[in-house]
Image (tube, rainbow, N blue to C red; front, side, top):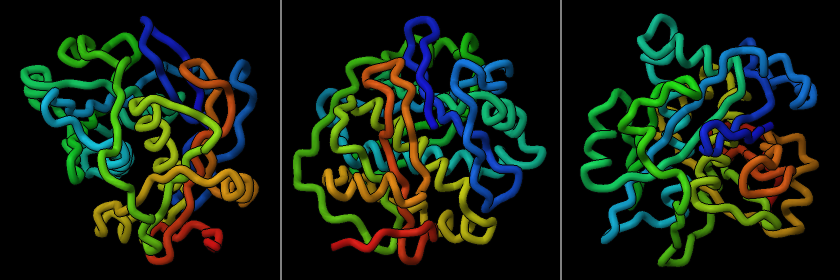
Length: 264
């Protein structure tokens, strides 16, 4: 369940559920944010940077989906696992709040960001680079100088129906979020879905390129989804929006086999 706090004026978001002890188990429900023992751990943040060239900005939905896939990509990368070079940072990050921050870059800013250790994930029109977690007060200077506010994007073309074979991250229709905030929330939803899966299901999803869709649910469907026992992202309301549910992760028929509500 995500929490948002602020450090140095930069919005931070992170689920309030702890990672599971074994693949396939669901994270336990947390204590209230004000009393959670994970607040006592050193706090880290997962940086994501979206490329936003002035002449060719990405489509909003594609950027949000690409950010979600970027989170899954770094979670599954061999450098994040075992004794990999990023594994300590990934463990420290997941032992505390699962915070994510989306910043934007173009031109020379983007080139400097690409020179730092990380992974660039490409969508149809979007490029998102994800970096290993950093301390809240320890951002690399070439990332710290990037802007976090004003990340606004549109969908120039109609958004198609989601692929029924792949998972869908459903957005709350009653909440309005900036593109950057939505990208972070979709990343939370994808991560909660990842925690639900067995090792073999994670491998299958990875082999499929982490196929997924992000769509806004209808009000009636949203009411059903939040009661379905699916992975659910809740925001504590420290940035942009009031506290409440933001994303439900629903499994696909062939990939990411979470429970799935039948579509009408």
